[in-house]
Image 1 (spheres, rainbow, N blue to C red):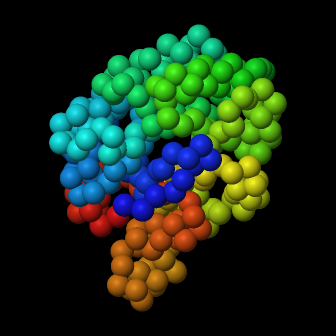
Image 2: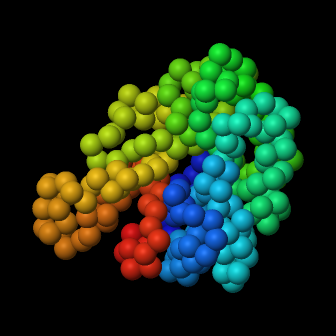
Amino acid sequence: METYILSNGVTIPKLGFGTWQIPDGDEAYQAVSHALKVGYTHIDTAQAYKNEASVGRAIADSGVARKDIFLTTKVWNSNHSYDLAKASIEESLQKLGVDYIDLLLIHWPNPKAFRDNWMEANAETWRAMEEFYEAGKVRAIGVSNFMQHHLEALFETAKVKPMVNQILLAPGCPQDELVAFCRQEDILLEAYSPLGTGAIFKNELANELADKYGKSVAQIALRWSLQKEFLPLPKSVTPKKITSN
């Protein structure tokens, strides 16, 4: 597995396995188990996905050493304060059954409950994340769904700058301005829904390219992400597709 290097020197696998919309229980367990079996070394989950326990169980049962797996989770919208974030991070560690998290993200910059004071809420959430980072319980910290103004606001109080921004990136949705800003700030771009939540499979050009190069439509989309130096996080529950991706 090839890797990128984050701004703090931590290496991160260039391709991750996404678990959004995979229900907790046997389905999540089997999907993650198969992903690890066929060579994925990067698993992305979140509190909001409600499948951390199954993801953690699959990792524990995989036979792959914990140090060889890069594990990401995210602080959900309801936990945007210093105390709430600290408690939720501890809860994620417990549910995942791990001693540390490789990458921890703020899932969303301005959830409805904190819309009137989102800057302060993010700053306090980030302060809690920085403490876990400094304590070695988290190896890298970042954000998700942050636009430029959300990042600039966070920079005003952050002691440690975000290392990752996980956003919607897919063919037809390149977000050029935000990507340029993140690169200027040495923030790695992760691409969630790199297959356009399935829309890519109906795209005529994508299908023509897949035929031309003898690849699947998903592989064409993932190559697009990789050639732009994004980190795609494809999700599937079908063993054949997990392997193909």
